[in-house]
Image 1 (tube, helix red, strand yellow):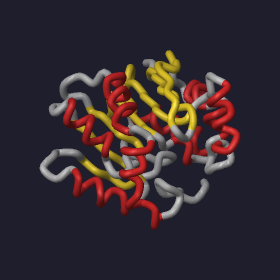
Image 2 (cartoon, helix red, strand yellow):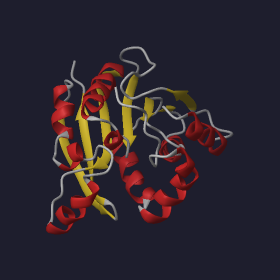
Image 3 (cartoon, one colour):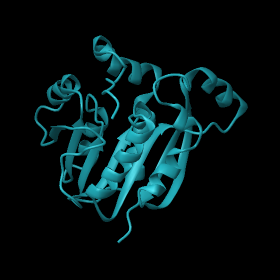
Length: 210
């Protein structure tokens, strides 16, 4: 297993994470679409995997107040920020890694994750999707927003530099849907795609069978 990579690769950059996503990557625009795509119903149990400072987690809870929303992240520093942002809500915050989730089998109706998978090495990506499959209930859904395959000459040009950073090559090479399928999911498809200042983003949906 590779060492844990903080949200912006270095802990001293963590305070810049929220402003960067909000003002540079138009975070709320694509995360709102992810919340809509997840199609969360009343009282569902929802896990935000790699929740970071909790922006998406809070959006999920505010949009679906009766849902039981949990955020999990491997970085205690960002979890403290998330707890401060969510004072007055019933969100549960847990420390844990995507490749070894601290939950029993078949407990969540939805798992959502945003801009997390590209931080993981290839083997850890595969482990993470197997763990997600394990903790989802039958017919539970996975919704992923992360870097994806380029669909234009512009985005193909953009990734020539970005693919060297962290573990993004799997994403840009279109391997994420394959890894999700290998984990046991069905109905794996790219629901939407976007262009960000850092490269192409892809929104995937997958369903756990019986």
